[in-house]
Amino acid sequence: MDTPQKLSPTTIFLHWIIALTMIALTTIGFYMALDHIYALYDWHKALGVIIFAFILVRVWWRIKNRWPVPVRQYPPLEHRLAHIMHWVLIISTVLMPISGMMMSGIGGHGIHIFGWSLVPENLDPTTGEAIAFNLTLSQLGEETHEILGYIFAVAIVLHAVGAIKHHIIDKDRTLRRMIGH
Ligand code: HEM
Ligand code: HEM
Image (cartoon, rainbow, N blue to C red; front, side):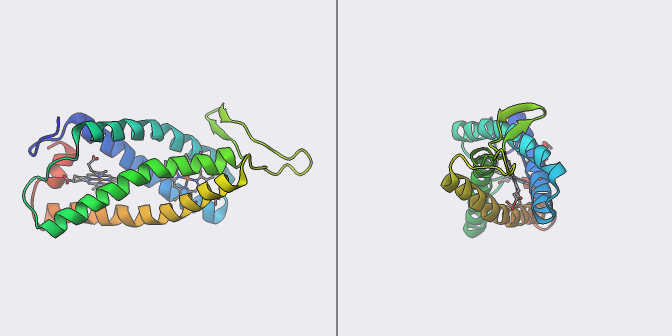
């Protein structure tokens, strides 16, 4: 269980494995979308689907345990901002993989996890181009993935700056507690 003094190993493990993977996927995602580096697509998709399993466990863990209680009383505005950011982050962790799977899977591009085909491609036999199983849903996934990608990138920066402010300026235990100290 999480307490104001100590966070459980489950909270800490899930926070960091998801945080690091999501940061990596965001970086790879923007890079591959800008330069269309197709070698990265299968890695990005596979890692995104795998981390989704951890994300679902984390959501269940949060529902069961509620949000961690702050380490001390901070000004209400600061507390509110941090809380909104936690919601933006956790919702993004759910919607980024779902929208990605909609774009690729329903879009007919296929999803493969290291050789295992989760969703097959749907290719036009003459042109070899992907044909969407449902164009509206795949486009909705694509738009969501792109717009939320930007929102998520901004949210990570604000969240990390907040954590560093707690550590350096307020000198409280917020960051140390998330590292397990
Ligand atoms: C789980 C966390 C994920 C994160 C944080 C993430 C992040 C991103 C970002 C920031 C981009 C660049 C923005 C864009 O143009 O869309 C991107 C692109 C992309 N993502 Fe993800 N992604 C995730 C999961 C997935 C999954 C599960 C799939 C598919 C199964 C996927 C498929 C793609 C594809 C195909 C692109 C390239 C779109 C293009 O070429 O325009 N992503 N991702
Ligand atoms: C360098 C990057 C990061 C740092 C330094 C950091 C640090 C922290 C700290 C110190 C807390 C505890 C806040 C408190 O006690 O009120 C926290 C909570 C949280 N962080 Fe991060 N974080 C980072 C990246 C991320 C990323 C990328 C995500 C989303 C994928 C994320 C999602 C969350 C969420 C949802 C919480 C609420 C508690 C929980 O569900 O575990 N963090 N973070």
